[in-house]
Amino acid sequence: MRITGVAELPLHHGKAPEWLVVRMQRLAKEIVTIIIDEYGSGEFLKRLSDPFWFQALGCVLGYDWHSSGVTTVVTGVLKKAIIPQEHGVAVCGGKGKLSRQTLLEIKGVGEKFDFSETQIKGLCYASRMSAKVDNAAIQAGYPLYHHAFFVDKNGKWVVVQQGMCLQDRTARRYHWLSENVSNFVVEPHDAIVGDIKREIALNMTARESEGCRKVSVDLACGPPKKIMRLLLSIRPAYQKSLESWLPTPTRSNYVPIDVLSVPLSVNWKALQQVYEFKPRNYEELLSFKGVGAATVRGLALIAELIYGEKPSWKDPVKYSFAYGGKDGVPFPVDRKAMDESIQFLKMAVDESKLGNSEKMKALERLRVIASKNIQ
Image (cartoon, rainbow, N blue to C red; front, top):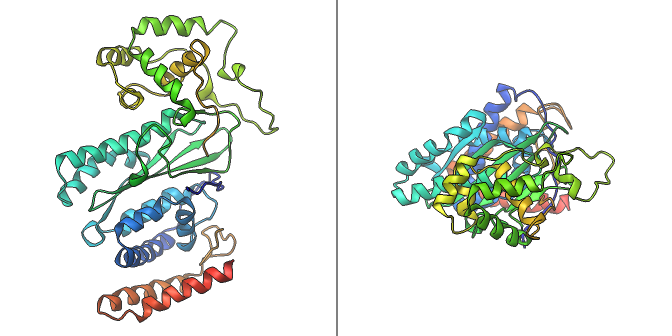
């Protein structure tokens, strides 16, 4: 059974101060080294796919427990702290412009890890499809602005990406784990977390959207002119939004989502190419360049209103501070305590490599005691 839940991720401005980032990097390196030495790189990736562990890591490193910045800062810190040759793990991508370098970085990492061309292509595909799914197949008002791709020397991967909604100033984080992805378009996530659950959201990855996915593929395999006629037939002049066909939201603080408007147009050039290509399934359709949110939405709407195949309109979505938070909440960062912890962990790692495992055992006992006290 997978863990589901909600974590608050309000948008915060500003950046982590340099003195904190430096310490975060040093502390992160020791934590990652211990986990990989003790449990292997696969276990480290599995933990990253757990949103609660990821959030807790941000707390331990001294960042805000409830900030959207946890995602970007923690992945940025890990990217600098993790050394592929030493840890057998690499971090590609990041926030904004860095996310657009992901595929190039994956290729570079693939060469370092001596992956085959087929493996590298597979990793690049996983990066592209995970982003495509969360940008287009799930439409809840959170376009992506951050995409981080973690891969280990065995070819296992994790995606941690985040989108933001400027209308209500909230963020949403998506976690993917390669070993749990059997199909990119059918409930592929390990977790989707955020502090807002939409009353209305298009979810083409839900199992109950299977009929709608099949009709969408059938439509895309037909002449684009037919799709254009069908779109015009269900978009009378007075109809402005998909929400007119959906239950009226009851929440007092409801925020209309622009992405749920009836598409005025779709990428007809891309649909012509899809028509000529004839995709065999929804994953092939979605993976096609140029097939974006508007096209997905238009096909889903036609499938529901004309062919009766409804998509899912249901939105698919304990921490404690170790050293304080950068904004002084719940208390200022204790620099001395953080430095001492870094040194202690570093010594534990160094001595464990020499065969002295007593400190590692002490750390494990401390973890058990701490977890009992928290409960």
